[in-house]
Length: 288
Image (cartoon, rainbow, N blue to C red; front, side, top):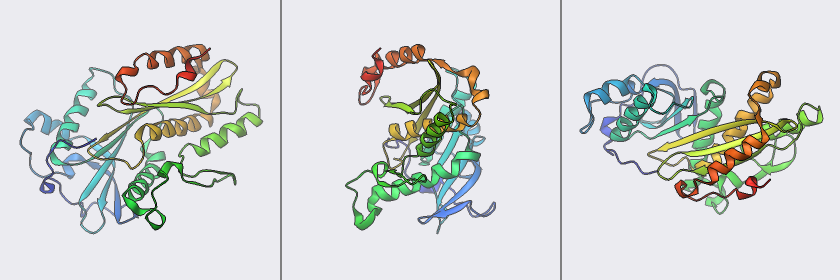
């Protein structure tokens, strides 16, 4: 998604204090827990006082900066899904408007399960690497294979897509099935992208016959590209969330979804294909 805000970098304040970065990677320094008010200087034209005062209080889980200058490159935020019409949704919209105006790209992950403390570092490393690869940073500049589709050796010794963030969850599901804790070993999923809106990924596994553990993740790119198809990344992150919940199936049991209800939900999504940027490519999941 292309930013519609100011590209004048003078609106962004370099991070030069506040503790050592969490990590350095490919010329980038990653800082934790910064408020938007720490990153901007001066209210840009077109932003109201209410938008400004509200947005400055909002925080990001990670801020990625150029290691040499400290200038913010993009921010990452993990948040639970917001309720339509809620005060939090209004605050999020104001924050998005200010970020666009000052030229601060933001990657927002909306999930009831994923948390920055547990998943933020891996995601930000992934995005930095994916953006580097998309910019021609692959072996010998070869980008003929998408970053997500690079093959290699997985942690369990098998060959597979090494940049599938859900790979460990898929392995965990197989192990749980062997231990007879799951009814099916396959982590399934789908992904879509709403026109002029977020990407959305679903992932699920059948825990009991006819009863599924389902996770949904929305991914919002504001002002930049994360280097891979955001819809596929959203599905992979949903698989990561499934893996988190597989750790405690007793706790997950009350939230299991009837398989027929899941199929109805997928059909409802398919019925909205005209609202999707690339249509709905998972019609086979709607069949009985």
